Length: 130
Image 1: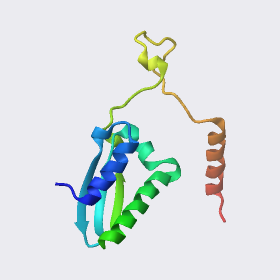
Image 2 (image 1 turned 180 degrees about the horizontal axis):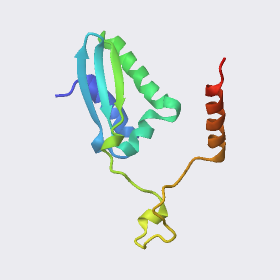
Image 3 (image 1 turned 180 degrees about the vertical axis):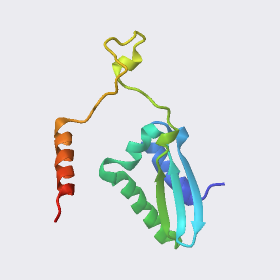
Image 4 (image 1 turned 90 degrees about the vertical axis):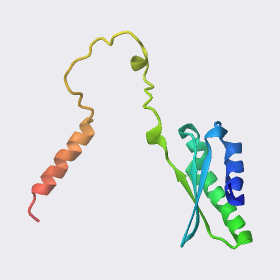
């Protein structure tokens, strides 16, 4: 049985996301108040958080207004369940079924010249006796 606060957040979030069936709101009461934990599909996480967290902050503001009406203190935690998501590769080479030519078994050094130079300069500074 879900409470009015869970239903409230669930209704708003389901209206925002592309996968409304994956929206789950859990409720926990502790000494600090009511903690609502929101879990959504990883693809919808950006929609729920919004640019610079504006949407998430708006959800928290609405919860604060509901808390004023119900004499309760609400906290909203948006869980990042991205680790449950499968590892997707987006490069066209990994999606093709043909073998990749010009590959070697040597390790690839991805560090740029700038970062190498910066590391060398920092190493020299560490050697100085000040």
